[in-house]
Length: 345
Image 1 (cartoon, rainbow, N blue to C red):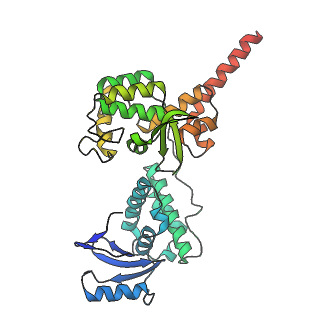
Image 2 (tube, rainbow, N blue to C red; image 1 turned 120 degrees about the horizontal axis):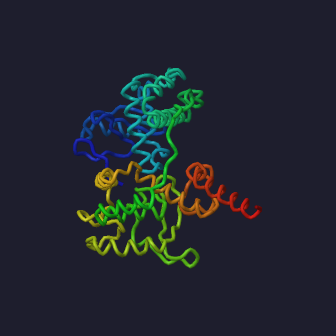
Image 3 (cartoon, rainbow, N blue to C red; image 1 turned 45 degrees about the vertical axis):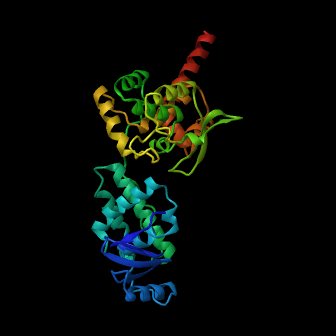
C-alpha cells in the first residue's frame, strides 16, 4: 500500500488529511484534530495519547467528520477501486453543501433536496443518493444517529433506453478504423463479457488450459469481487494472436500492453479517448460497456439460460441478465412460437 504523506512526512496509522491542510486521528469513529506538523513533539505526544484512548477529541459529529471516519473504515477499504473513487467524488459534492451540518440534524427532507439538486442527471442523482445512504448507515453503526433518514428515499425515475447491442457491421467498421490495441480491447470486451477495467487487468499468467472449461482466463472482477473463468472463443484466440503480432509486447505480462510502462496496467482513461474517436468517426453511439451486454445478448440469442450467461459475464443476479437480454429472449421465443405454428398448420 502506498504511504500517505503530508508535507513530505509519512503519516502514522490512523492519521488522515482533511483538504490537505488539516490532520485528524481517526479510529473506531472517534476523531481528534492533530497539530499540522508531524515532525513536532506536540504532534507525537497527542498522537500517542489518542492511541491509548486518552483523548477522543471535541467531535461535533458533522457530515465532514463522518466522511473522514468512513474513508478510514474497513468498509471503505474493501470497496473496489472504481467504486471507492466514485464514492469520494459524490461525497465531495455533498460536503460542498453540508460539510459542517451535524449528522443528527440531517432530515429526510434534506436528503430529497440533495437528490433533486442533481435530477437533471438521473444516474448521478441516484448514485449520490446511494452514497448518502451508505454514509448515514455508517453514522448509525457509530451510534451518531438512531435511524438512517435516507434509507427509504426513492431514486429519481429515469427514462433510460434499453441498451442496444453492437451489430456485426459496427464491429467490422470499428476494426477498419482502429489501431490494433483498440481492436484487441473491443474483442476482449465483446468475447469475454467483462468490464473495461477487468479487461485491462488481464494478464498472460492468468491464462490456462482448464481441464473442464478449456483454454481461457481466470478473472477476479474488480467491481463485484466475483471470481470467474472465461473460456476464449475461437474468434478471440485468433484475434489475440493476430493483433498482438502488431503490438510491441516488450515482455509485458498484460494482454493489453501499456507500451509506455510495460509493467503497469493501462488506465482506462488512456484508452477511452482513442476508442471514442473511432466510434465518433464511424457514427456509433453505443459505449464500450455496451459490449458487455452485447456478449450477454448474443448468448441469450443462442438460447442459453440465465445461469449459463451469468457464468460468463459474472452478473450478480439473473434479474439483471434478464433486463439486458429481454429483447433477444423475446425474439427467440417469438421465433419458437412461429416454428410451432408452422408445424401445426
